[in-house]
Image 1 (spheres, helix red, strand yellow):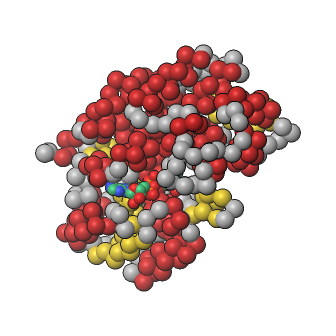
Image 2 (tube, helix red, strand yellow; image 1 turned 135 degrees about the horizontal axis):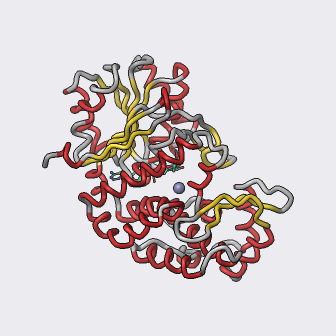
Length: 374
Ligand SMILES: NC(=O)c1ccc[n+]([C@@H]2O[C@H](COP(=O)([O-])OP(=O)(O)OC[C@H]3O[C@@H](n4cnc5c(N)ncnc54)[C@H](O)[C@@H]3O)[C@@H](O)[C@H]2O)c1
Ligand SMILES: [Zn+2]
């Protein structure tokens, strides 16, 4: 395969923090060369998890060494619990032990958990060292590896401790997705569909026509990842620190986060992307209820997400959910409520989402009661 022909590049133009995202087949084997041609450092600390390590760590280290880069490695447990102070300390210690200086770099090889944790460590060790993302889950390739949000969880909630620290390079190897479980792939796909629903109706229509090829791999998969990275980059460049429009990326997430909390973050019942899928259908239905959009749009969103195998209704979640009032409390905790009004991402139709600052919480509660009768 002539890999360079099918590589796609998305440039994130953030001034002195600008970087490239490369998307293509076989990128892990070429990582050393791509990094060495862009970064000066010849020392790296590679952080990964126990699922990804046996599959891709050797190939990545060999590729770095072939380009004259020495690599220290650290393999952490897989899963959301790894985004903790304990493991942050382990990563910081590994980076210092490897004597990573400011021109050297840290590599995150894994999904969003490893990316968020490693990015945070890179942002604070020596007040910031260089950082390369090698995302290996679909979610991390299309979302978490781009945009510079890094962090860990606190007992007060998810992602509450962290810094903005942009990577210096993102290498998204589309082939590694072949070892991802079908369920994790679908969950990442919900975020891909999200970009269409935010402001790219043509992309959503393209996904409706081409999703099978995106799932099976090849050119369409690379196209979908590149379009998603471009969409995320556009939003991040317009509002890097989330003062306004970056909130659009939370379409479906207010309901989704409430459902994740209601299922105690038990991945056997619900993973993030599945919550987002149900949340996006709810956001479209709620917008129709507020007479902002046609109910046909909500049906169209649901049809597509269901077709790819994602859950689309609260009743699709195995096990009992708490009553609507408890879901509403979770929403109120996630979003600041100002005198009974909530900030929500609503829509006027497919690809016409907007930030609404004045959604009455009473409306949301009666909508939830309707959707989830006890
Ligand atoms: N920083 C951001 O902007 C941002 C955005 C969205 C999500 N996130 C964060 O991302 C995290 C979720 O990311 P995720 O869904 O990638 O979760 P994850 O990192 O837990 O990966 C999911 C599972 O897939 C495994 N895996 C990853 N790549 C694999 C591969 N190629 N083959 C086989 N198995 C593989 C992992 O070991 C893990 O078990 C959450 O913590 C979330 O808060 C961050
Ligand atoms: Zn998300």
